[in-house]
Image 1 (spheres, one colour):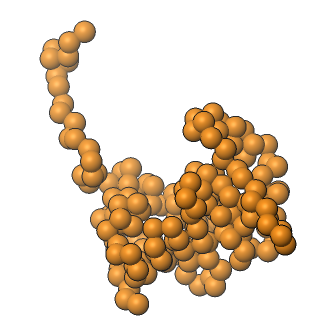
Image 2 (cartoon, rainbow, N blue to C red):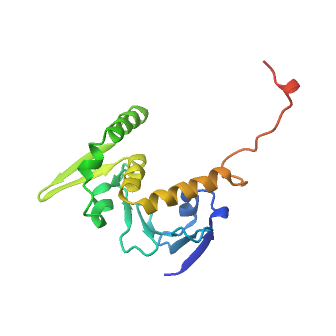
Image 3 (cartoon, one colour):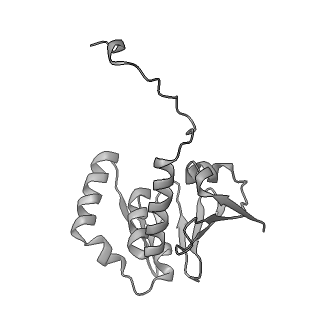
Length: 173
């Protein structure tokens, strides 16, 4: 397994990086400019299984997606036994988020899959990110940092057209 180091200034989106990775991807080590912030290792096993590993923490966040592109929240929470998924699901803000997300997507955002010895909880990808943030502060800080770099960076985004500036006298009403 090889290790690639990527400067966040050159990262356009996490999804863009993941699409560039071969099916059996190496670990990507996202480097932080700020020395006091942890970095986060991202391991892409295949298009349906991604792991996030904060520096200095043996616990990781594993995103396992099913055919409907929902994330296995039970697997994500495996390394966080002090956290109870039901506490997250029953939070008023999370309930409001799930209602709004369900309205927007027109599909369930939380599914319990029962089997003989228990069940698994599957979440919509957006809800899974909210859940990951709830599980670990390291992921939340990393996510904010990556988002800030993407939004504030002077980069060309894939699949976008450059904005042509017009003077006020060129704008038609």
